[in-house]
Length: 384
Ligand code: 9MR
Image (cartoon, rainbow, N blue to C red; front, side):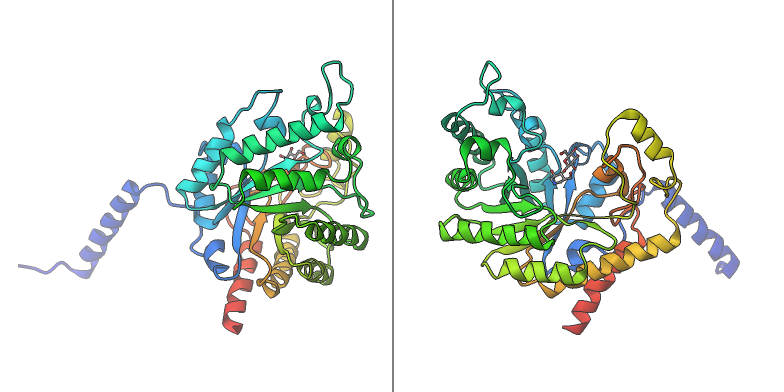
C-alpha cells in the first residue's frame, strides 16, 4: 500500500483542522493568563458585576468573569433602592441570582452596600407626610434592612460594605440624613446590626479619595474610634477610582501603611483608572451633548491612541507594584467593572463619553494594561 505523500498528508491535516474548527464551539475570548492565578497567594482579584453578567445574558462577559476573577461584587443589585424599594417591600430577584452565580463559580462574594447616602430611597428618611423621621424610627428601619438583607445571605455573602462614603473630603463626617437624624453613632449601629445578622461575615468601611491627607486623617480617626469601641471592622475599602496621576504610588503606599497600622485589612474595592480629562459634573442634556461632541472633553471617542494605551498599562503596573508590596494586608483587589464598555465612567461626570478605565476593552479583549498587570505579578513571583 502506498504511503500518502507529504503533500497529501498536509491536505488531510488541513481538512481535519478545518472540520474541527468548523465544529468547535465559539472560542473562549479569555486569554490564557488569568488574574486570579497570577495573584494567587497574594490576594483575590475581582470585579463588580452588572445584572447582564450574573444573569449570563451577557454570555461573553460572564465567561470572562468566570475565567479571570475569584471574587465579585454586585455593582448595584444589593443597594437599598433595588433590594428594598418601598417600606415592607424587598426584591431579591437580582441579588439572589448574583449570589447563585458567585456560588456556582466558587467565588468570594461581597455585599455592597448597606448604609449609604446615595441610591437610598427618600422614604427611608421620611414619615408619611414627608417630614424627617426621628432617630428611633430611622434606627429601626436601618436594623430591619440590615437584618433582612444580611440575614438572607448569612454564611454566603462573606463580606459587607456596611457603611459607604461617610467622610467628606476634609475628613469630617458627611452630613447625610443618616448623620443628621441619628447622630455620629449611626456608623457603630450599622456595624452592630450587621454583626448581629451574620457574626461570621467580614464587615468593611468603604470610601474614595482616602489617599488625600485630610480624608485619610479622617478615616484613621474614624477607624481608631470604631476599634476602641470594639466594633468589628475587618477591613477598610479603598475604592481606587484613580486618575493617571492620582494617587501617586507614594500616596497609595503611605495610605495603606497608615490604615494597616490600625489593625485592619486594606482592600482595593472599586479600582479603575480614568484616562479622560476632568469634566464638570452636569447632567443636563445640552451640556452632556456638548461634552460628548467636544474632543477636549471626549478625546478618544473613536479609539484610544497607542501612546495612551501604553501609559495606562504603565500606570496599572505601578499601582499593582504597590498592592503587591502590601500583599500581607491586602485580601482583595476588585475592579469596578469588567470591560471598558461596562464602566460607570462612560456616564460620569457627564453621560455619553467613551472611557477606557479597565483591563479589558469593549469586546472584552485584554488590553496592554492586562498584560502589564500579569507581568507585574510574574516579576513578583520571580523575585520571591
Ligand atoms: O457603578 C455604579 C453606577 O452604576 C451607579 O449608577 C452609581 C450610582 O450612585 O453607583 C456606581 O457605583 C458607585 C459605588 O456604588 C460606590 N462608589 C462609587 C461608585 C461609582 O460611582
